[in-house]
Length: 531
Image 1: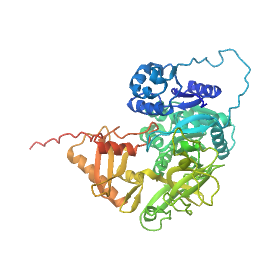
Image 2: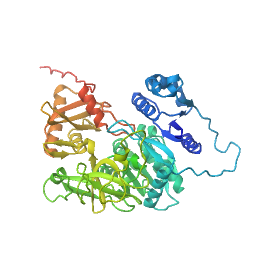
Image 3: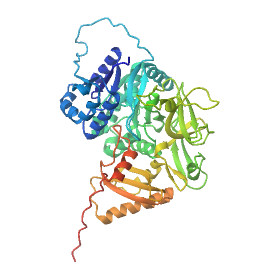
Image 4: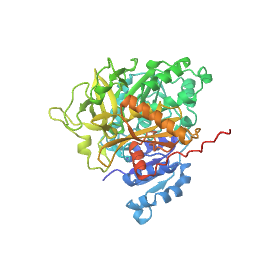
């Protein structure tokens, strides 16, 4: 009989951690989920409830006030739940938490779980599709902790600091499980407090003398944009030995901007530690060794379009940041996505991962043999297909994009993030990290490039100003990629769908563009000048 599943609806904090380990002690499966605040949060929650069919929904006292609202909005999905057919649905429980140290003291006997039993249904961010529940066993979680510990090295004096949400793989593994496994102190703060004022993260690092922290690319950009020069000297980031960055493509421009902006705060560029991972392998697959400089190479653009990494000598180049070397205990191979054969070093293909931290598969999906236990003739063992494109060169992994997001026009491969960056840099009225590029087919079945860009809230544009921005975007993309856009669609800030971890949803944006629900920005009338 399958272990009972417990959906967790908690804000980050000690209650979250206590509830998580309480679920493990009860030999149940934890299903971390984003708190149901806002329409996007409710949509994601409804998808997870329908898929996971939890036996219990465990909710904090504060979030319990949303109960009726959640159940009303999710009534269709709950009706599909076996228990929901009788009108009851999953048990909705608000646990009581004793203040630490206030209750009676009891001798504690450790309970060893069945290593092959499910510990978590870790739902993916859903950047290219609906979120899927990755089945992670206790052995998977332990293997990930062992691998990360060997990679980071033993340091009992290490101090961590994290604002990452614990319902996502990077925040859960890096902010909770790893400190518990290695026994080092970690300072936790909520994602909301970081987003409201990014300086709080840097201030916490300063105050607690944190030596390690982790964040996605967009967090570094936010800090550069929101922390003014006048506050730089009040921060001391010299304590940081490793600042891990991952969860999305890593841009050298971001690393340079952050390190230059906070150089006066004592931050060292060498502290940056690019890494690569995904929920399907618990989280960790590759990373930069400590003390090493981030590996950045200029590659020839024409060779990149032909799926090869060749150092640029003359001609146009593209800068790629290495995501480091394969994690201890894991193995990576690069496979031709159509021919299903391993390719040689320096050739771009799909990244396949093998290791004890690779999950059992997606919850209640029938393609797990193909995705999680793929095999190649002449190569031992089975591999998990990541759906990511990349290449290994001189032992370094370079992640180039998502296979599903690849734009192929006139037989040439184009990575959307490159086109998006060119568009973003073309005009300062475009909202940072808010450009999406994708392709659609025209009536002749030819691929056409579409670019959607958010305009900063402070900008009220006339039709001529909007056209000037479109022209700037088009000029930049022709110069860098040699592509003519079929449409450049300008929208208001917040219009482009994102995941709960802040990743742009290109597929969802494409769908909204095609069905007409993606509304263009409102324009103002140009004022006529008096003569």
